[in-house]
Length: 197
Image (cartoon, rainbow, N blue to C red; front, side):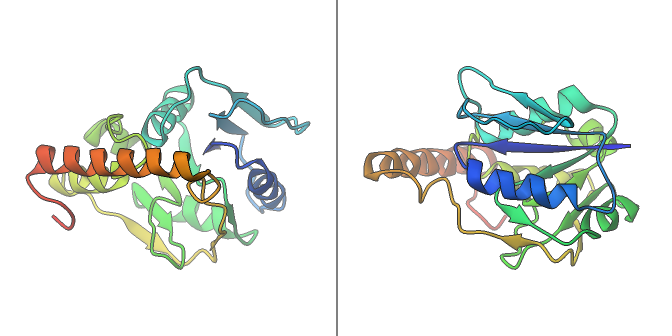
């Protein structure tokens, strides 16, 4: 038994493609849970539960919420703009590592990953002050300090070009850039260094 958790912010076309991809998976989740931070996503799929938080959550807070509503069952977290072969979820679930990622061509371990309950218990929740940026880097460092590492598999994941940032107008992109810079500053204040640590 396992769950799939997907945060999204207005990337509904790509999210629909991901759900179609999940329907073809050889291993089916008990439920797919979508954190819809845009509040407009609709689907008629019976196994999809939608949370529409108000106000919208950042990525780190979305991951934490997904964990809270699924723990202690295995939780696979996914970006909203991925596709992958039918066997990929099985590769993640069959790997005994506590944290395993089906890496993308961009080497982003936090695009499609299984984070087991033992990791949450050891490392804790994601730091929600990293709303959209550096939250994965912060968590990886905390894992390292706890003696944990990221196991990776070649899962055939395709990461599409539906970046939320690229879809924003100029004002929106400037706000996101300011948030990125603020998160980077907080990372330095927290750890005394910018990446890599």
